[in-house]
Image (cartoon, rainbow, N blue to C red; front, side, top):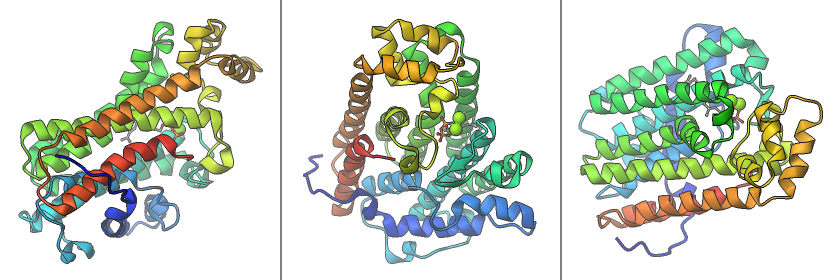
Length: 352
Ligand code: FPP
Ligand code: MG
Ligand code: MG
């Protein structure tokens, strides 16, 4: 399909529906147990919900493959389980958007415990606020709620896809923790880890909404591939921002990756030009002054530029997937496709 350059504001295309999903999320994470309720609701509160990128992507992909715009009834909050309206494709796709955000936030709660993080989204991390034990259990609780919603879709292919995401998140985290010396310097290992930690959720949510749309297998593959490329671009930019951004803008400390012993894409590219960096990477920047030393070495290389190029290649590959989809069946689908393409540009220029 020819997608004309209509310059849509990508997040506004499904904004109202993402608000509906957010409202549903606030409903679906409540519980009668006060301490659990406070903890589980923490990152769903208004104002610190984050960019809600995953629900936005899921709903835009739903629209991109849809024969028509969703009718107004889908812009109202519906608290019935999906199983009570099995024929309403759009409602089921909204549930998937919700599941993606639940899994994402659960993984952040666990991640902040593992990383001993003090802040997240500009506020205290949950572990800092309520302690590690409650934070871990709150993450488990969100996964439990995600599982119930997933089961209510009555579609075992999607259960399988989203369960694989959980496995990937855990594998990615362990790959990062237990990398051998050889793997620490290896860009392929970094990319495999990045797929697991970041891209798999976007890729498989995107595939899942395509499956729910009854799309042909090759279209489902393209939806998956869009999410994979976008996720990798997103993470490489995240790595760059960690090196170049300020902590006040990011809402979390800058240079956090190296300080926690991680060599990301720009650092790995830099190490190919400046072998002195390799020793620092291998000892995970543990000695006093290692991070400062590494920064001055990186500045002498094309590391940042090469990582920018890598992100741009993946962003372009994602946009190409959208351009190659079969002809859009509605204006609404055209606009959603343009928004998905705009997001591939936006990912490259974001500042936080
Ligand atoms: C953020 O990475 C972390 C992730 C994207 C995934 C973390 C996965 C786990 C902790 C495994 C458990 C998974 C589930 C589903 C409960 P980061 O630390 O590099 O980034 P940050 O700057 O946002 O902290
Ligand atoms: Mg972290
Ligand atoms: Mg981490």
